[in-house]
Image 1 (cartoon, rainbow, N blue to C red):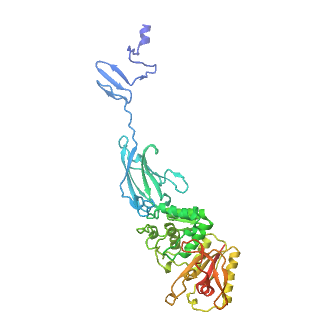
Image 2 (image 1 turned 90 degrees about the horizontal axis):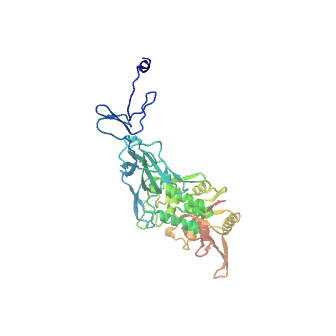
Image 3 (image 1 turned 90 degrees about the vertical axis):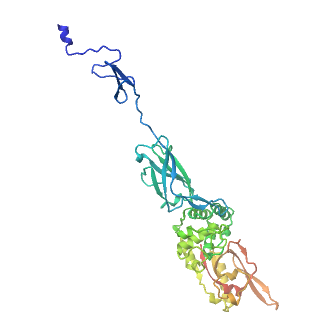
Amino acid sequence: MGTEQQKKGQIQIFAKNIRGVAQGQILEESRYTKNTAGGRHVQNGSGGGVNNDANRGRQIPKTTEVLEIERLTDLDDGSANDGTGTNTKKGLIFGKTYTFKVKKYTNGAPPNLKSIRWALSYTDPDTGVYYENNLQGDVRGETIKIAFTGNTNTCGCNVEIKAYISNIKKGGVLKIWKHNRFRWFDGKRVEDELKERVDNKKPWSINQSGTSLCGMACLFYLFAKEQPQAYKTFAKRLFRTGEATFNQYTVKPAEELLEKKVNTKGYPMNTGSMPLIDYVTLAGTRNTDNPKYKGGDEEFRAINWPWVVTNLSEKLLGYKEVSSNGVYDPTKKPRHYNKRIVWKMIEDINEQISQGYRLMLMIDSDLIDETEDKLSNLFALEYHWVVLETPIATLQNLNGKGEIFYTLNFKVYSWGGNTVYLKAPITMDHFIHNYYGYVKVK
């Protein structure tokens, strides 16, 4: 009886397929536990579900990733940058919004489309620094609209539109070219022009061509000559991003200049045969200073008055000593001047050069042309700037009567030509009638 009382209230189970512990727990050591009690009863190990007469394996949630992205917005034309000057290709442009969408997944769309993330990656063409995500905030969803505004640093390079769920390196990638800000200008030609001016040491290649940007040409000639690498960096960035800063002066031309198209020969429209990089720098700087100049062959609005040249000499080029002497006065042509006045002017110019100043001469373009003025063009607007490269030499001559007279010769930079002496020495009268003054910098 004692033994029977000890067993009272206990249930004894005799089975080969059930294991237990004293606490009454069941240990499941296989994918399912099979109990037979008057029929077939199956308990699946994965989720405790029950079915009859069939065994079901554990259900593992499926994983998926973005495989392919598509662009829903049309791309825009711009230069092919292949050296032809006129070929075009498609690409993104600054200031426009484009729509992108996930097109394919590795294993179907995810249950929650908000699990899809987006990124915009690119490598800075100037520094080589790689930016993995240039988008603002945590951008999610199956479709995205990207407004290419604000950051101009992505211009002039390939950008990568990325969509992913769990790993940015394993998601979908769409590579697209984004045009330079001067998108119609051939980037290969721009590179060649900069190489000519800097690497080949020919800053005199800078050419205003059919524009009235002679003052800008003189400034950038000095820039390229005396600070070649800084000039190159400035010019490349201005071409690529539409904005460049040097010595705390920022050049940022208007949209109409950035959208300047080229003629059939690949030169900027309405500029003659102006090199592309010279349009970018010269016209871009003049438009920044005077928005009324629209980047064409306008004459009066493109003119660089002395205060414009002095201002940019200080703020852009960074010269510490800048001053001007003289004033534009086309009515001086028919006047008679005492030779002493002419001698004094020449001596002053030569003294400035001897003291290490760079001189930009304000002249009538006839000064460096072998053709003398005629009555028909006596008062024509031929205001011009040149860079004086040598002291003015005075040459003694004898006329047919055996009388002594003097002619002048000097070397200048002008109109994209090599800095050579005048085609022929000029008379002192010719000099005084076509010379107005100078801006000196150091």
